[in-house]
Length: 384
Figure 1 (cartoon, helix red, strand yellow):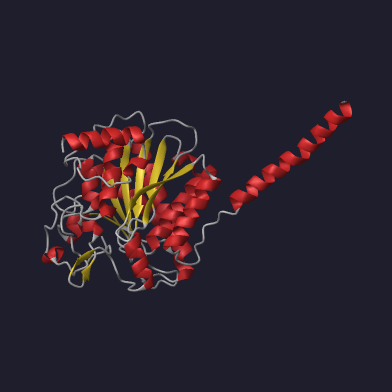
Figure 2: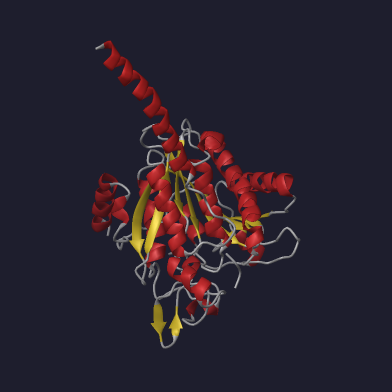
């Protein structure tokens, strides 16, 4: 009998390390490719692989489907401790489809939080992250395959005109500002109605769910390539109630990037930078109840100091994504410092709850979304 038991122990000693080694190899096989711009399918495949390999730390949710039937996905990232109700940083990328660097930076952010968790665990101790790395997949595919400067969605507007500018489609002074917002053939077209686009409705619904559950802290939208940190308002030149807080965070991000890479990042209230217009996601997030809301206009300058704007060469993708991560990390550090769990947030919603929620949004949380649906039924040319 003892020989049998000894054999079992020896076998277990051999098999268990092998199993652990296979597990490590399986995780290491999930690599983020940053030597070229990923296709829509490549982005979705990377997210799926990551969710399978790190299921305790990242969950994917299909939160909408576009006009051309592509899935909108959000990566919900946690440290795996199972503590519910943590505050959330919500990040989206590629509302403007020609800004190819933004999905790369969003994917690197996911990679840093999930694969390189040990180095960045402080960003997940009391906060979760919800990241939408490709908010306009139809436009992104069209930009990569047909017209690289394409900015909008691909919904038909009548005649031979297509697409709505998602960052003009939110219900904040919609269509107010300049004549191109009303032109269905212009890249600034604000749409046929506020939230006419499922992509904008999906982002909006995520915002409201986080605010309604009292988890919302910071909305961060990635754009290129103005090398700026913008904060509200865009539609109004008046200061926001926590203007100093926004300005302090913006300057902290700019300083961190300058110290790290030498890139100079400007910090602005957008309306004072380039005038007022309506319909932006950044303004809407603050009105919906997020205490902090920013646009991060990433750099498009290559290591050769050439300004490439939206399309840096493939050799610069990793460098610019890493530089952007430096800024994104700084945003998070300061937001966590300013809004620790001990700080009570008085959520003030200054916009009406939506009554046309995106159809797949219930995937976030059935209980929260049932409540959300009930309440809504009752109450029925710049880069930015």
